[in-house]
Figure 1 (tube, rainbow, N blue to C red):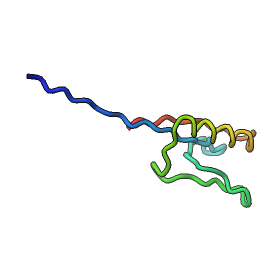
Figure 2 (figure 1 turned 45 degrees about the vertical axis):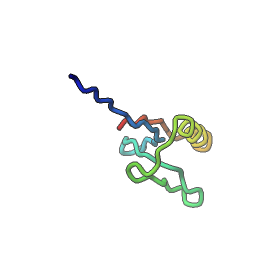
Figure 3 (figure 1 turned 30 degrees about the vertical axis):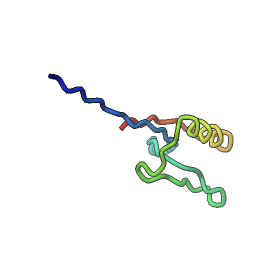
Figure 4 (figure 1 turned 135 degrees about the horizontal axis):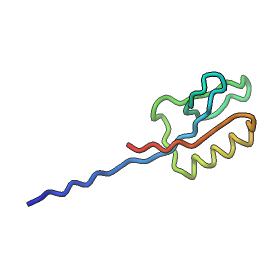
Length: 76
């Protein structure tokens, strides 16, 4: 008799920012308007649905059109 094992994958999204100098993608939550500082997230601190990530990406892209952002899909 064969046992069937079903693996469940956890999928979430994060918004990332491309640093101009280092050329590295950094997961972020937002920018501090008063200082202009990037507010990065620690690993897996926030797990967004695709809709939430798209909304955040759109908001950041409108607010900072001179910066590069992307949505990263994470599968665990």
